Length: 270
Image (cartoon, rainbow, N blue to C red; front, side, top):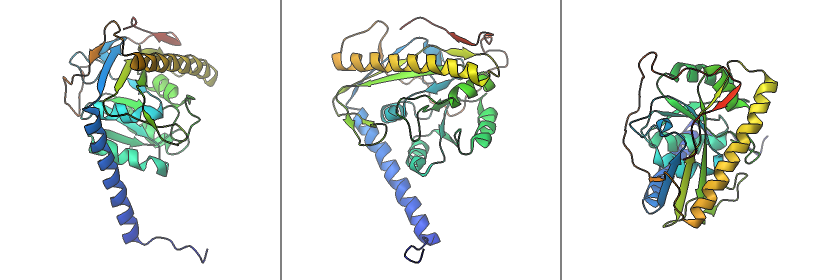
């Protein structure tokens, strides 16, 4: 221990400032890059999109960790809260999300989970949630039970989001984090609402996890093939912001009824 000194308070403050500055710079760079990218979206149900006027129900969005660079700059200043782990590797994401106007709750199934659930419960009438089910450390594209547990306990629909890139840069990280290449194509497929019965046990959650992971994988594969080909698909639209609102609250009773089935998907393919 003699060879290692703990950083002083001033050093820690400088480190945090440098990290925040770098994260904001990354967010600004991504926003500039995305202005050169052709982004197209397709929805099973466009009412789940918090940037559209028909948005009518808060949801829990799940997207693989590697695809955050294309998604976060698309939906800033919307009623969307990110669940970010307390791991130190996630600090950059917290700072970038704060710069882009997202609300952030820190916690995961392994660290700070109980307090995170309390915060999410307090926020669920004002915002949707976005979760990376394979973060913060992987394995890559392996869904944890956390998002399904939340969907069951909070009685909010789960919405898988598939993302595809045309020739992205890939970082040498556990998730092969994707950085969009300037003047390339990106495609986003927002899946159907999946409603889970209240308070499912672990066995039922595991069954739902398998089905949801398979659907999320299929959506990503479709989006990737769509991005590479550049073909048109029925219902595709360019990304257009129609709402800029940090907080949105629905009138009591305006939400659709909850399904009693253990797992039910709504909507038709876009």
